[in-house]
Image (cartoon, rainbow, N blue to C red; front, side, top):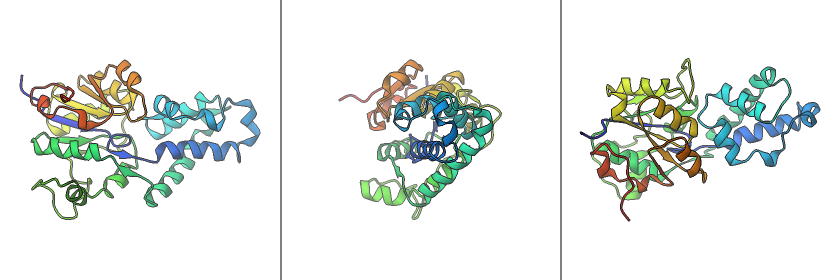
Length: 261
């Protein structure tokens, strides 16, 4: 069997250590301690209950509105359906401020992996449900990163950012169904002109891994939040804590495998 012919990357939590989790948590705290203080006692919310594990299990990987609704329902917020737009908009204002302030970083292991995949001639796409993904991608300088890392790739141009680096970019598009539905990933494979079964998806969220598998693709889970078990239970083909652990040679054999020690 020939190797993988397409790679699909999520953005938040895979390529970028984004401020989304912080924005979701702070937005709900500000509402529950301010405008919604009157219903706080009728909910199960407390700031310390909004943990990274809750974010990964309840919100991560979902479109903004469905993620907001899932969080409000998780914390038993009364009239969640009527409050979801307020919560989603408040979170969006916060995350934009954090992005513009530079409150995020790119994961070096992910950039190394993306560059290596590109260097191996595998077409790649980014496919994130986040409307903010483009803001991140346009601020991450590949030429600067490569110079700092001592990486020599002749395809990196001066001033090049992650925006425009990938062969297809589906981030922020509106789809009829969000993850764990595979629609965004199946569309990405189509835009790469690669059969889904010849693609692998790099995801940090359970819903993203589920979407990859539902679309007939291999799932590479990146456990950024001590959630190896959750990703494995979602049937990821390989779970790593760093993309440096991935055996690049195995990709040419259509396998997701761990690099030998």
